[in-house]
Amino acid sequence: MSDFHNPVLLKEVIELLRVKKDGKYIDATLGGGGHTGEILKRGGVVLGLDIDEDALAYVEKNFKFLASRQRRRKARRSGQISNFKLILVHGNFKDIDEIARLNKFEKADGIIFDLGVSTHQIESEDRGFSFQKNAPLDMRMDRSGESGEVTAADLLKVLDKGELYELFTKLGEEHRARAISENIVRSRGISPIETTDDLVSLLKKTYGIEKEISGKRLAEISKRVFQALRIAVNSELKNIEEALPKAIKILKAGGRIGVVSFHSLEDRIVKTIFNRFMDEKLGKIITDKPITPSYEELKMNRRSRSAKLRVFEKNN
Ligand SMILES: C[S@@+](CC[C@H](N)C(=O)[O-])C[C@H]1O[C@@H](n2cnc3c(N)ncnc32)[C@H](O)[C@@H]1O
Image (cartoon, rainbow, N blue to C red; front, side, top):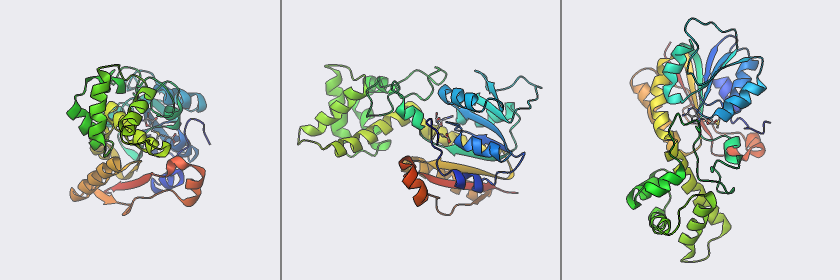
């Protein structure tokens, strides 16, 4: 168990990617290195990327003797050969093809995307991912500035009523998006919405006009609204849409891509793209139905409850 992040569907991912000694694997969402660590244990070599420098620092410290970190660069200097079993890169998986090529990983045996946020990100006191901790409404996974400076507070400041409505409907699947958007626009004229507490109390007021809202109901609404903002700030859906077609190109013949998603918006994209790969005769879907966590895993890790794993195998 890691305090940084507990890997989800670990056994299933490793089995379905058929991890083997000296195989080359790309962990596109390194996090606390849970999946990477298991691949390394089985003798695989890993190119691990993350958009969040906290993840790289954590893994670098914990896998000291194995890791080489490419600081602020997507690549090694040309011609440099590494003896390391693990190469760490700060980067966005939407650039996976370029990062793989520069690090000589363009013929990967397997690629894993474990989408969403890490426990570390949610639990961090100052990042604004959790509606349960008061913090500035930041929500950027990449705080280096390389992916832009727009925060959740900025979106709440600049988007108009219609744009906010679309955001909460499409990315949060929130039924009361209209009332919430109207209230945001009204409230921000009086005082800015800058912290997670500001936003939660606004949501409470939006509903409280009609009747007292229960803590459970407020938590459900906050979860959807926070999810919508986080997805927008980090362009999460667009990144997956861009990354998967690039990932299949850098996969070896017979290699596999595994994607663990955590909500229906992500899963729908993965399913659609894998079906398209099938239509284009690029290979086959290994998971007719997505794999979900076992009873044992659910008991140990509640955060795994919405996880779904889909796997695609490239033609031989
Ligand atoms: C669920 S965690 C991964 C946990 C990891 N598999 C483990 O076992 O510890 C997701 C990670 O993906 C990273 N991430 C999200 N979007 C990314 C992107 N577009 N490019 C690279 N990393 C990304 C996040 O910063 C986060 O650390």
